[in-house]
Amino acid sequence: MELKIQDLCKSYGKKKALWKFTTEFENGIYGILGPNGAGKSTLLNILTDNLLRDSGSVLYDGEEILNLGASYREIMGYMPQQQQLYDTFTVTHFISYMGTLKGMKSRDIQRRMDELLPLLNLQKVRKKKLKELSGGMKQRVLLLQALLNDPKFLILDEPTAGLDPKERIRIRNLISDLSEDRIVLIATHVVSDIEFISKEILLMKNGRLVDQDSPENLQKRIYGHVYELCISQDELAEVKKEYEISNLFRRDGEIIVRVIADKCPVKYDAVKVSPTLEDVYLYEFEGVKRR
Ligand SMILES: Nc1ncnc2c1ncn2[C@@H]1O[C@H](COP(=O)(O)OP(=O)(O)OP(=O)(O)O)[C@@H](O)[C@H]1O
Image (cartoon, rainbow, N blue to C red; front, top):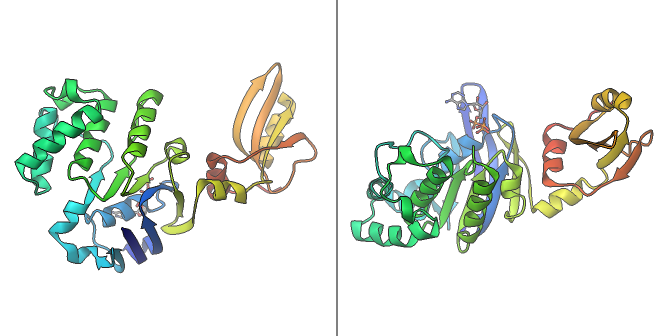
């Protein structure tokens, strides 16, 4: 199964929210990273068929999704950003309602619900109203409705927004478990959500695809641009001016800063370190400060 996106464009007035966006997806997890306004939501809204594109094509196994009509709903599952759910609905009522909107038969909705409720650890709260659930439970309900039709193409918008680390890890593991035999697209600001589970990361900026590669390759590419410096309090202000700081901590009266630099900051006690995906993000989107 493959999804090919070719020269996708969308503008709002003069603003090019998406510009000649071209890529291909096969089964596996793809993480989309980009600063605010990069065009992530615009892309997802076009792929979920909630927004009309200006030009370009989206082919699912060679077929334009706009021509697939209702059968696209059977292929695609969408988990939107957390929003006011139908607060007075119970979990099962909400899921049944979403299944009906997807055009599923009630027998199939029931069967999938029986499979998915225990898998997402929602069995015990199935009769509770949505307004009574914690943020993490609500996110799992949203994930469940996206999985109801066993979609081959799963689109997740900020799946862990506002969750504590335990719930975030739980959702991440679930997504990873459920990614077999489907394309999973995750847009997020939380780098750790996708760093270790994604086959590839897409970096977006100003409506364009800046880069797409495995996390390992993206990290390798900036090797030699990330350093840890051991500095004094007096040196901190200068270092802040000179470098993009990716981390800072204090230890025994010393300050250890992790910086993005175009070359080794020789005037400090500097050690070259292995880049993380967060460093890649800073390097791509904040850039290297130059004197
Ligand atoms: N309905 C709209 N009308 C006008 N401009 C819009 C509209 N929707 C988005 N834009 C603009 O298009 C650009 C891309 O927006 P988009 O919401 O797709 O970015 P994003 O990467 O999802 O941002 P965020 O991370 O903040 O959600 C931004 O400059 C935004 O201001």
